[in-house]
Length: 285
Image (cartoon, rainbow, N blue to C red; front, side, top):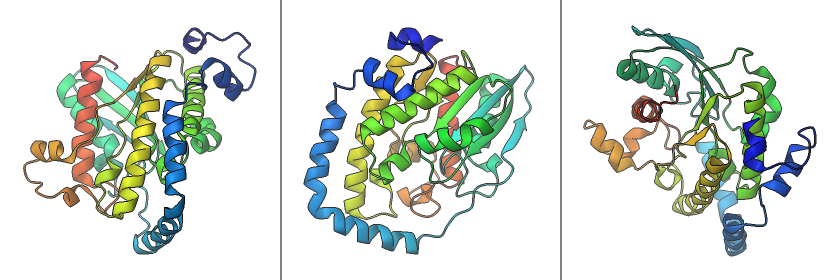
């Protein structure tokens, strides 16, 4: 397995995966973790305010349903490729009625347009899921047939739950190992993390707190990309002003959101286009 050489394991694969990480992943190098701990201490006086704001927002926001029809296909003139899309609420298509108008459909349509390949796609995603919970609850529900590419949209709920960078590192690395065992030598793409610092539906304190933690998750994701041979991290941060330049009809940042937090069809379209172009550029599919 590729991760054995990457992690330079000295023990057998049958041992607990988190134990491997603590030994081979050099968790003593805790730069993002140290930043997290310092930030946590500084935020102690603000925790009651964050808790109150969080409860108010939960009451105010509608509970959006997942998109319908999580399996689809685009028809091109060339060979057919299979894409598996997994993750949290954005991959579940919250904000649109059907997945064909969400990230999955937008990615597939644009990739077919620029490559000529037909794309068969399947979504396995759940709103509110973290990397650890996805691994526990959904890994065995993934299709047996090996996909040609796996697109992964995770990381936001680690931030919303204020999980540490080390928790993300261990949980996501374990998920990658499991996926690599299930689908050997399959390319995987971790999608760019959401721009929480620009969410219009949350408070300024939340934007500051979540934005800081998202930066730490970003740092760890860069590190993970170096350890996993078949992982590509879409590391270019999402900047809404750049997206507005690409979508001239959009004049306000709020036009990218269905409820102030989750994407809408416009967002899924431009996001899917960018990832399709990345996948083609790096010849991942």
